[in-house]
Length: 241
Length: 241
Image (spheres, helix red, strand yellow):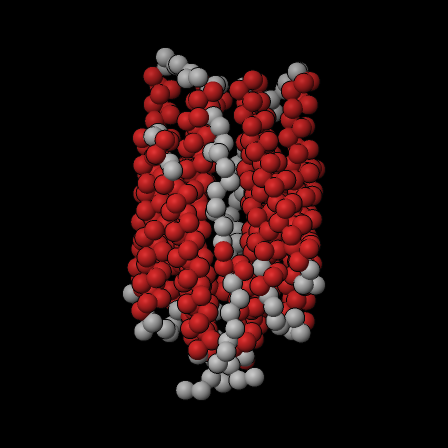
Protein backbone atom coordinates (compact mmCIF):
# COMPACT_ATOMS: atom_id res chain seq x y z
CA UNK A 1 0.00 0.00 0.00
CA UNK A 2 1.21 3.48 -0.94
CA UNK A 3 1.49 5.95 1.91
CA UNK A 4 0.18 9.33 0.80
CA UNK A 5 1.85 12.43 2.21
CA UNK A 6 0.80 16.02 1.79
CA UNK A 7 3.93 17.73 3.10
CA UNK A 8 5.77 18.84 -0.03
CA UNK A 9 8.94 19.64 1.93
CA UNK A 10 8.88 15.93 2.70
CA UNK A 11 8.72 15.08 -1.02
CA UNK A 12 11.71 17.35 -1.51
CA UNK A 13 13.63 15.44 1.17
CA UNK A 14 12.90 12.11 -0.51
CA UNK A 15 13.84 13.57 -3.91
CA UNK A 16 17.09 14.79 -2.36
CA UNK A 17 18.03 11.24 -1.35
CA UNK A 18 17.26 9.89 -4.84
CA UNK A 19 19.29 12.71 -6.44
CA UNK A 20 22.30 12.06 -4.19
CA UNK A 21 22.12 8.32 -4.98
CA UNK A 22 22.08 9.08 -8.71
CA UNK A 23 25.08 11.41 -8.29
CA UNK A 24 26.98 8.79 -6.26
CA UNK A 25 26.20 6.22 -8.95
CA UNK A 26 27.60 8.41 -11.73
CA UNK A 27 30.70 9.15 -9.66
CA UNK A 28 31.27 5.46 -8.92
CA UNK A 29 30.93 4.55 -12.61
CA UNK A 30 33.50 7.21 -13.58
CA UNK A 31 35.93 6.00 -10.91
CA UNK A 32 35.78 2.42 -12.18
CA UNK A 33 36.13 3.48 -15.84
CA UNK A 34 39.16 5.63 -15.03
CA UNK A 35 40.75 3.00 -12.75
CA UNK A 36 40.63 0.42 -15.55
CA UNK A 37 41.92 2.99 -18.06
CA UNK A 38 44.79 3.83 -15.69
CA UNK A 39 45.61 0.12 -15.41
CA UNK A 40 45.47 -0.56 -19.15
CA UNK A 41 47.48 2.54 -20.10
CA UNK A 42 49.87 2.40 -17.11
CA UNK A 43 48.77 5.92 -16.15
CA UNK A 44 49.77 6.61 -12.51
CA UNK A 45 48.40 10.19 -12.58
CA UNK A 46 44.93 8.98 -13.51
CA UNK A 47 45.26 6.26 -10.85
CA UNK A 48 46.06 8.92 -8.22
CA UNK A 49 43.01 10.93 -9.32
CA UNK A 50 40.77 7.87 -8.84
CA UNK A 51 42.24 7.27 -5.37
CA UNK A 52 41.52 10.90 -4.39
CA UNK A 53 38.01 10.76 -5.89
CA UNK A 54 36.98 7.97 -3.50
CA UNK A 55 36.54 10.55 -0.71
CA UNK A 56 33.51 11.92 -2.54
CA UNK A 57 31.64 8.63 -2.19
CA UNK A 58 32.57 8.27 1.48
CA UNK A 59 31.12 11.73 2.09
CA UNK A 60 28.09 10.94 -0.05
CA UNK A 61 27.30 7.85 1.99
CA UNK A 62 27.71 9.72 5.28
CA UNK A 63 25.48 12.54 4.02
CA UNK A 64 22.75 10.12 2.90
CA UNK A 65 22.91 8.21 6.21
CA UNK A 66 22.66 11.38 8.28
CA UNK A 67 19.90 12.86 6.11
CA UNK A 68 17.95 9.58 6.13
CA UNK A 69 18.03 9.43 9.92
CA UNK A 70 16.86 13.04 10.20
CA UNK A 71 13.98 12.33 7.80
CA UNK A 72 12.92 9.19 9.70
CA UNK A 73 13.03 11.04 13.04
CA UNK A 74 11.17 14.10 11.77
CA UNK A 75 8.64 12.56 9.37
CA UNK A 76 8.04 9.17 10.96
CA UNK A 77 7.47 7.63 7.51
CA UNK A 78 5.51 4.44 6.98
CA UNK A 79 5.46 1.68 4.38
CA UNK A 80 6.77 2.79 0.97
CA UNK A 81 8.46 5.95 2.20
CA UNK A 82 10.27 4.08 4.95
CA UNK A 83 11.47 1.46 2.46
CA UNK A 84 12.56 4.29 0.20
CA UNK A 85 14.70 5.79 2.96
CA UNK A 86 16.14 2.50 4.26
CA UNK A 87 16.77 1.51 0.62
CA UNK A 88 18.74 4.73 0.07
CA UNK A 89 20.94 3.83 3.07
CA UNK A 90 21.63 0.38 1.57
CA UNK A 91 22.23 1.56 -2.00
CA UNK A 92 24.64 4.30 -0.91
CA UNK A 93 26.59 1.65 1.03
CA UNK A 94 26.86 -0.50 -2.12
CA UNK A 95 27.95 2.49 -4.22
CA UNK A 96 30.56 3.41 -1.62
CA UNK A 97 31.92 -0.16 -1.92
CA UNK A 98 31.98 0.10 -5.73
CA UNK A 99 34.15 3.21 -5.30
CA UNK A 100 36.45 1.29 -2.92
CA UNK A 101 36.80 -1.48 -5.50
CA UNK A 102 37.65 1.06 -8.21
CA UNK A 103 40.21 2.59 -5.83
CA UNK A 104 41.69 -0.86 -5.17
CA UNK A 105 42.23 -1.35 -8.91
CA UNK A 106 43.82 2.11 -9.18
CA UNK A 107 46.19 1.37 -6.27
CA UNK A 108 47.62 -1.65 -8.13
CA UNK A 109 48.55 0.33 -11.25
CA UNK A 110 52.08 1.01 -10.01
CA UNK A 111 52.63 -2.63 -9.05
CA UNK A 112 51.73 -3.99 -12.48
CA UNK A 113 55.19 -3.48 -13.92
CA UNK A 114 55.31 -6.16 -16.57
CA UNK A 115 53.10 -8.13 -18.89
CA UNK A 116 51.52 -5.16 -20.67
CA UNK A 117 52.57 -6.89 -23.88
CA UNK A 118 49.92 -9.47 -22.99
CA UNK A 119 47.25 -7.26 -24.56
CA UNK A 120 44.59 -10.00 -24.48
CA UNK A 121 44.68 -9.84 -20.65
CA UNK A 122 44.00 -6.12 -20.70
CA UNK A 123 41.30 -6.44 -23.34
CA UNK A 124 39.76 -9.10 -21.10
CA UNK A 125 39.87 -6.80 -18.06
CA UNK A 126 38.32 -3.96 -20.07
CA UNK A 127 35.56 -6.25 -21.36
CA UNK A 128 34.85 -7.46 -17.81
CA UNK A 129 34.75 -3.86 -16.54
CA UNK A 130 32.42 -2.79 -19.36
CA UNK A 131 30.04 -5.62 -18.52
CA UNK A 132 30.06 -4.77 -14.79
CA UNK A 133 29.59 -1.05 -15.54
CA UNK A 134 26.70 -1.76 -17.91
CA UNK A 135 25.12 -3.79 -15.12
CA UNK A 136 25.56 -0.89 -12.70
CA UNK A 137 24.27 1.72 -15.20
CA UNK A 138 21.13 -0.26 -16.06
CA UNK A 139 20.40 -1.00 -12.40
CA UNK A 140 20.66 2.73 -11.61
CA UNK A 141 18.29 3.40 -14.52
CA UNK A 142 15.79 1.04 -12.86
CA UNK A 143 16.30 2.97 -9.61
CA UNK A 144 15.34 6.16 -11.48
CA UNK A 145 12.40 4.62 -13.37
CA UNK A 146 11.25 2.12 -10.69
CA UNK A 147 10.49 -0.27 -13.59
CA UNK A 148 11.30 -3.38 -11.50
CA UNK A 149 9.52 -5.55 -14.10
CA UNK A 150 12.58 -4.91 -16.30
CA UNK A 151 14.96 -6.26 -13.66
CA UNK A 152 15.29 -9.72 -15.25
CA UNK A 153 18.43 -8.67 -17.14
CA UNK A 154 20.36 -8.62 -13.87
CA UNK A 155 20.67 -12.39 -13.47
CA UNK A 156 21.64 -13.03 -17.10
CA UNK A 157 24.40 -10.47 -17.00
CA UNK A 158 25.56 -11.79 -13.62
CA UNK A 159 26.22 -15.10 -15.37
CA UNK A 160 28.06 -13.41 -18.25
CA UNK A 161 30.27 -11.54 -15.76
CA UNK A 162 31.05 -14.76 -13.85
CA UNK A 163 31.91 -16.64 -17.06
CA UNK A 164 34.18 -13.84 -18.28
CA UNK A 165 35.87 -13.56 -14.88
CA UNK A 166 36.49 -17.31 -14.77
CA UNK A 167 38.16 -17.39 -18.19
CA UNK A 168 40.28 -14.36 -17.25
CA UNK A 169 41.27 -16.12 -14.02
CA UNK A 170 42.42 -19.19 -16.01
CA UNK A 171 44.29 -17.03 -18.52
CA UNK A 172 46.15 -15.24 -15.71
CA UNK A 173 47.18 -18.53 -14.08
CA UNK A 174 48.47 -19.73 -17.47
CA UNK A 175 50.66 -16.62 -17.85
CA UNK A 176 52.07 -17.20 -14.36
CA UNK A 177 52.88 -20.81 -15.12
CA UNK A 178 54.53 -19.93 -18.43
CA UNK A 179 57.02 -17.53 -16.84
CA UNK A 180 57.63 -16.81 -13.14
CA UNK A 181 58.50 -13.23 -14.10
CA UNK A 182 54.77 -12.71 -14.77
CA UNK A 183 53.71 -13.83 -11.29
CA UNK A 184 53.79 -10.49 -9.46
CA UNK A 185 51.96 -8.54 -12.16
CA UNK A 186 49.45 -11.32 -12.85
CA UNK A 187 48.71 -11.63 -9.13
CA UNK A 188 47.81 -7.94 -9.00
CA UNK A 189 45.74 -8.35 -12.18
CA UNK A 190 43.95 -11.30 -10.52
CA UNK A 191 42.92 -9.04 -7.65
CA UNK A 192 41.88 -6.33 -10.14
CA UNK A 193 39.70 -8.84 -12.00
CA UNK A 194 38.20 -10.00 -8.71
CA UNK A 195 37.47 -6.38 -7.71
CA UNK A 196 35.70 -5.77 -11.02
CA UNK A 197 33.67 -8.98 -10.65
CA UNK A 198 32.61 -7.76 -7.19
CA UNK A 199 31.31 -4.53 -8.73
CA UNK A 200 28.80 -6.67 -10.62
CA UNK A 201 27.74 -8.24 -7.31
CA UNK A 202 27.11 -4.82 -5.79
CA UNK A 203 25.05 -3.84 -8.83
CA UNK A 204 22.98 -6.97 -8.17
CA UNK A 205 22.61 -6.03 -4.49
CA UNK A 206 21.30 -2.64 -5.60
CA UNK A 207 18.80 -4.32 -7.94
CA UNK A 208 17.54 -6.39 -4.99
CA UNK A 209 17.20 -3.27 -2.85
CA UNK A 210 15.23 -1.49 -5.59
CA UNK A 211 12.93 -4.52 -5.86
CA UNK A 212 12.44 -4.33 -2.08
CA UNK A 213 11.73 -0.58 -2.16
CA UNK A 214 9.08 -0.94 -4.84
CA UNK A 215 7.43 -4.22 -3.81
CA UNK A 216 8.20 -4.49 -0.09
CA UNK A 217 9.40 -8.05 -0.72
CA UNK A 218 12.71 -9.82 -1.19
CA UNK A 219 13.64 -10.45 -4.83
CA UNK A 220 12.54 -14.04 -5.55
CA UNK A 221 15.04 -16.92 -6.04
CA UNK A 222 18.66 -16.97 -4.96
CA UNK A 223 20.73 -15.25 -7.64
CA UNK A 224 23.75 -17.05 -9.15
CA UNK A 225 26.05 -14.34 -7.70
CA UNK A 226 28.83 -16.92 -7.48
CA UNK A 227 32.56 -16.86 -7.99
CA UNK A 228 33.16 -20.08 -9.93
CA UNK A 229 36.95 -19.71 -9.87
CA UNK A 230 37.15 -20.95 -6.28
CA UNK A 231 37.05 -24.47 -7.72
CA UNK A 232 39.55 -23.89 -10.57
CA UNK A 233 42.54 -26.24 -10.44
CA UNK A 234 45.22 -26.05 -13.13
CA UNK A 235 48.32 -28.17 -13.51
CA UNK A 236 51.61 -26.63 -14.60
CA UNK A 237 52.49 -29.53 -16.94
CA UNK A 238 55.57 -27.76 -18.26
CA UNK A 239 57.06 -27.49 -14.81
CA UNK A 240 60.15 -29.67 -14.25
CA UNK A 241 59.39 -32.43 -11.77
CA UNK B 1 21.23 13.19 24.90
CA UNK B 2 19.55 9.97 25.99
CA UNK B 3 15.96 9.55 24.87
CA UNK B 4 13.90 8.13 27.74
CA UNK B 5 11.09 5.72 26.88
CA UNK B 6 8.54 4.19 29.21
CA UNK B 7 7.19 1.47 26.97
CA UNK B 8 8.86 -1.71 28.21
CA UNK B 9 7.73 -3.69 25.15
CA UNK B 10 9.86 -1.21 23.24
CA UNK B 11 12.88 -1.99 25.45
CA UNK B 12 12.27 -5.65 24.67
CA UNK B 13 12.32 -4.91 20.93
CA UNK B 14 15.65 -3.07 21.21
CA UNK B 15 17.07 -5.88 23.37
CA UNK B 16 15.92 -8.36 20.71
CA UNK B 17 18.00 -6.58 18.06
CA UNK B 18 21.09 -6.56 20.31
CA UNK B 19 20.60 -10.25 21.12
CA UNK B 20 20.29 -11.21 17.44
CA UNK B 21 23.43 -9.19 16.61
CA UNK B 22 25.34 -11.03 19.36
CA UNK B 23 24.09 -14.38 18.02
CA UNK B 24 25.07 -13.44 14.44
CA UNK B 25 28.51 -12.42 15.72
CA UNK B 26 29.09 -15.74 17.45
CA UNK B 27 27.91 -17.62 14.36
CA UNK B 28 30.21 -15.59 12.07
CA UNK B 29 33.20 -16.24 14.36
CA UNK B 30 32.53 -20.00 14.32
CA UNK B 31 32.19 -20.03 10.52
CA UNK B 32 35.57 -18.32 10.07
CA UNK B 33 37.29 -20.58 12.63
CA UNK B 34 35.91 -23.70 10.94
CA UNK B 35 36.67 -22.44 7.41
CA UNK B 36 40.32 -21.94 8.31
CA UNK B 37 40.43 -25.31 10.10
CA UNK B 38 38.93 -26.96 6.99
CA UNK B 39 41.60 -25.30 4.84
CA UNK B 40 44.51 -26.20 7.10
CA UNK B 41 43.37 -29.83 7.59
CA UNK B 42 42.06 -30.32 4.02
CA UNK B 43 38.65 -31.21 5.48
CA UNK B 44 35.98 -30.95 2.72
CA UNK B 45 33.16 -32.08 5.07
CA UNK B 46 33.85 -29.21 7.47
CA UNK B 47 34.11 -26.85 4.48
CA UNK B 48 30.67 -27.98 3.27
CA UNK B 49 29.25 -27.37 6.76
CA UNK B 50 30.61 -23.80 6.74
CA UNK B 51 29.09 -23.19 3.29
CA UNK B 52 25.69 -24.40 4.53
CA UNK B 53 25.97 -22.36 7.76
CA UNK B 54 26.16 -19.10 5.78
CA UNK B 55 22.37 -19.22 5.26
CA UNK B 56 21.88 -18.54 8.97
CA UNK B 57 23.59 -15.15 8.69
CA UNK B 58 21.65 -14.21 5.55
CA UNK B 59 18.42 -14.95 7.45
CA UNK B 60 19.71 -13.11 10.53
CA UNK B 61 20.39 -9.98 8.52
CA UNK B 62 16.98 -10.11 6.82
CA UNK B 63 15.27 -10.64 10.19
CA UNK B 64 17.10 -7.69 11.78
CA UNK B 65 16.34 -5.43 8.79
CA UNK B 66 12.64 -6.30 8.83
CA UNK B 67 12.39 -6.02 12.62
CA UNK B 68 14.27 -2.70 12.62
CA UNK B 69 11.90 -1.23 10.04
CA UNK B 70 8.86 -2.38 12.02
CA UNK B 71 10.28 -0.81 15.21
CA UNK B 72 11.02 2.49 13.45
CA UNK B 73 7.54 2.59 11.91
CA UNK B 74 5.73 1.67 15.13
CA UNK B 75 7.83 3.46 17.77
CA UNK B 76 9.10 6.46 15.82
CA UNK B 77 12.31 6.47 17.85
CA UNK B 78 14.49 9.54 18.28
CA UNK B 79 18.17 10.19 18.93
CA UNK B 80 19.93 7.32 20.70
CA UNK B 81 17.25 4.73 20.00
CA UNK B 82 17.19 5.57 16.31
CA UNK B 83 20.99 5.29 16.12
CA UNK B 84 20.70 1.98 17.97
CA UNK B 85 18.32 0.63 15.34
CA UNK B 86 20.15 2.01 12.30
CA UNK B 87 23.39 0.74 13.86
CA UNK B 88 21.90 -2.75 14.17
CA UNK B 89 21.09 -2.68 10.44
CA UNK B 90 24.71 -1.73 9.64
CA UNK B 91 26.35 -4.21 12.01
CA UNK B 92 24.23 -7.12 10.78
CA UNK B 93 25.30 -6.24 7.21
CA UNK B 94 28.98 -6.38 8.25
CA UNK B 95 28.46 -9.70 10.06
CA UNK B 96 26.69 -11.13 7.01
CA UNK B 97 29.77 -10.13 4.94
CA UNK B 98 32.10 -11.78 7.48
CA UNK B 99 30.09 -14.98 6.97
CA UNK B 100 30.44 -14.62 3.17
CA UNK B 101 34.20 -14.24 3.56
CA UNK B 102 34.34 -17.37 5.74
CA UNK B 103 32.29 -19.19 3.11
CA UNK B 104 34.67 -18.00 0.38
CA UNK B 105 37.59 -19.53 2.28
CA UNK B 106 35.66 -22.79 2.73
CA UNK B 107 34.83 -22.93 -0.99
CA UNK B 108 38.54 -22.93 -1.89
CA UNK B 109 39.39 -25.93 0.31
CA UNK B 110 38.90 -28.39 -2.57
CA UNK B 111 41.01 -26.31 -4.95
CA UNK B 112 44.03 -26.16 -2.64
CA UNK B 113 45.40 -29.51 -3.77
CA UNK B 114 49.12 -29.05 -3.15
CA UNK B 115 51.55 -27.19 -0.98
CA UNK B 116 50.24 -28.45 2.35
CA UNK B 117 53.82 -29.46 3.10
CA UNK B 118 54.49 -25.70 3.26
CA UNK B 119 53.31 -25.66 6.89
CA UNK B 120 54.60 -22.11 7.52
CA UNK B 121 51.97 -20.83 5.03
CA UNK B 122 49.19 -22.53 6.96
CA UNK B 123 50.52 -21.40 10.30
CA UNK B 124 50.59 -17.90 8.82
CA UNK B 125 46.98 -18.16 7.66
CA UNK B 126 45.91 -19.45 11.08
CA UNK B 127 47.74 -16.62 12.85
CA UNK B 128 46.12 -14.06 10.53
CA UNK B 129 42.69 -15.59 11.16
CA UNK B 130 43.24 -15.61 14.94
CA UNK B 131 44.16 -11.93 14.86
CA UNK B 132 41.11 -11.03 12.75
CA UNK B 133 38.82 -13.14 14.98
CA UNK B 134 40.24 -11.53 18.14
CA UNK B 135 39.49 -8.15 16.57
CA UNK B 136 35.92 -9.25 15.83
CA UNK B 137 35.40 -10.80 19.32
CA UNK B 138 36.65 -7.71 21.17
CA UNK B 139 34.60 -5.36 18.98
CA UNK B 140 31.47 -7.41 19.72
CA UNK B 141 32.35 -7.20 23.43
CA UNK B 142 32.38 -3.40 23.08
CA UNK B 143 28.97 -3.65 21.38
CA UNK B 144 27.70 -5.53 24.46
CA UNK B 145 29.35 -3.23 27.02
CA UNK B 146 29.12 0.04 25.05
CA UNK B 147 32.55 0.90 26.53
CA UNK B 148 33.62 2.92 23.44
CA UNK B 149 36.46 4.46 25.46
CA UNK B 150 38.17 1.05 25.14
CA UNK B 151 37.94 1.12 21.34
CA UNK B 152 41.54 2.30 20.83
CA UNK B 153 42.77 -1.29 20.41
CA UNK B 154 41.04 -1.47 17.02
CA UNK B 155 43.56 0.68 15.13
CA UNK B 156 46.63 -1.04 16.60
CA UNK B 157 45.34 -4.49 15.70
CA UNK B 158 44.35 -3.26 12.23
CA UNK B 159 48.01 -2.49 11.67
CA UNK B 160 49.11 -5.90 12.99
CA UNK B 161 46.65 -7.62 10.62
CA UNK B 162 47.89 -5.58 7.65
CA UNK B 163 51.55 -6.33 8.46
CA UNK B 164 50.86 -10.06 8.84
CA UNK B 165 48.82 -10.16 5.63
CA UNK B 166 51.58 -8.37 3.69
CA UNK B 167 54.27 -10.83 4.80
CA UNK B 168 51.97 -13.76 3.97
CA UNK B 169 51.34 -12.21 0.54
CA UNK B 170 55.11 -12.02 -0.10
CA UNK B 171 55.64 -15.57 1.13
CA UNK B 172 52.94 -16.87 -1.22
CA UNK B 173 54.47 -15.08 -4.22
CA UNK B 174 57.84 -16.60 -3.32
CA UNK B 175 56.37 -20.13 -3.32
CA UNK B 176 54.81 -19.47 -6.74
CA UNK B 177 58.11 -18.26 -8.15
CA UNK B 178 60.01 -21.23 -6.76
CA UNK B 179 57.82 -23.81 -8.48
CA UNK B 180 55.02 -23.25 -11.02
CA UNK B 181 53.27 -26.30 -9.59
CA UNK B 182 52.49 -24.19 -6.50
CA UNK B 183 50.75 -21.44 -8.52
CA UNK B 184 47.17 -22.73 -8.46
CA UNK B 185 47.12 -23.57 -4.76
CA UNK B 186 48.99 -20.43 -3.74
CA UNK B 187 46.60 -18.29 -5.79
CA UNK B 188 43.66 -19.73 -3.87
CA UNK B 189 45.56 -19.21 -0.60
CA UNK B 190 46.18 -15.59 -1.64
CA UNK B 191 42.44 -15.06 -1.96
CA UNK B 192 41.88 -16.83 1.37
CA UNK B 193 44.41 -14.52 3.05
CA UNK B 194 42.73 -11.51 1.44
CA UNK B 195 39.31 -12.70 2.68
CA UNK B 196 40.64 -13.05 6.22
CA UNK B 197 42.24 -9.59 6.07
CA UNK B 198 38.84 -8.21 4.98
CA UNK B 199 37.24 -9.74 8.08
CA UNK B 200 39.44 -7.42 10.13
CA UNK B 201 38.14 -4.48 8.07
CA UNK B 202 34.54 -5.43 8.81
CA UNK B 203 35.36 -5.68 12.53
CA UNK B 204 36.69 -2.12 12.24
CA UNK B 205 33.51 -1.00 10.45
CA UNK B 206 31.51 -2.46 13.34
CA UNK B 207 33.68 -0.57 15.85
CA UNK B 208 32.93 2.65 13.97
CA UNK B 209 29.20 1.92 14.00
CA UNK B 210 29.28 1.25 17.76
CA UNK B 211 31.09 4.55 18.27
CA UNK B 212 28.38 6.25 16.20
CA UNK B 213 25.56 4.54 18.16
CA UNK B 214 26.96 5.62 21.53
CA UNK B 215 28.27 9.11 20.66
CA UNK B 216 26.20 10.13 17.64
CA UNK B 217 29.43 11.09 15.90
CA UNK B 218 31.78 9.56 13.34
CA UNK B 219 34.83 7.87 14.86
CA UNK B 220 37.62 10.49 14.62
CA UNK B 221 40.60 10.18 12.23
CA UNK B 222 40.79 8.03 9.11
CA UNK B 223 41.77 4.52 10.17
CA UNK B 224 44.77 2.81 8.52
CA UNK B 225 42.40 0.15 7.12
CA UNK B 226 44.75 -0.28 4.16
CA UNK B 227 45.90 -3.19 2.06
CA UNK B 228 49.64 -2.52 1.70
CA UNK B 229 50.17 -5.43 -0.69
CA UNK B 230 48.78 -3.48 -3.63
CA UNK B 231 52.24 -1.92 -3.98
CA UNK B 232 54.23 -5.15 -3.55
CA UNK B 233 56.54 -5.88 -6.49
CA UNK B 234 58.77 -8.95 -6.39
CA UNK B 235 61.30 -10.10 -8.99
CA UNK B 236 61.65 -13.77 -9.84
CA UNK B 237 65.48 -13.66 -9.87
CA UNK B 238 65.75 -17.40 -10.32
CA UNK B 239 63.68 -17.30 -13.48
CA UNK B 240 65.65 -17.97 -16.68
CA UNK B 241 65.84 -14.78 -18.77
